[in-house]
Image 1: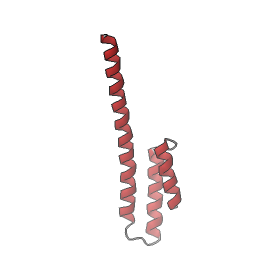
Image 2 (image 1 turned 180 degrees about the vertical axis):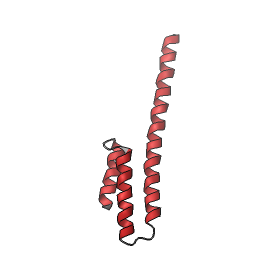
Image 3 (image 1 turned 45 degrees about the horizontal axis):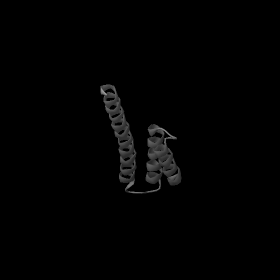
Image 4 (image 1 turned 45 degrees about the vertical axis):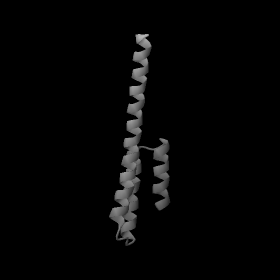
Length: 80
């Protein structure tokens, strides 16, 4: 199961999977840890979930930054 959640995260980072699929995989992994007696399953799930959310926010910020750059370039081209 661990390998599946890591694979899902990699596919999310490549844009092959959605964020919800990656988060579902994290939930499944956390449940597997809990069932196998890991006392820190909540921490592992939190850290994995946090990394997915941070990657999503980074991608969204990069998209916004690119959009602002494109608009500035268009405005500059129109003013010439």
